Length: 96
Image (tube, rainbow, N blue to C red):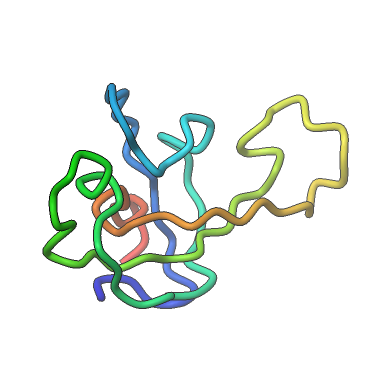
């Protein structure tokens, strides 16, 4: 697995057609790895009848609500957690 708990990551901003497991509202956003779930078959290829191999690491990624929704009316510390497959993530620029 490429990332560890606490690593800062950015979600790819790809605007792809078809079945994807990464919600559009977090694409291009930065967050942190809250947990690593392990490796699973890739649901993006499973949806088209493929075997979903090779398996892909899946992470729980945390985002500040205000980073995802600029007009979010709640507390600035409120957090959104989303499961994101590794191929959608890159290291956050400036964090190494």
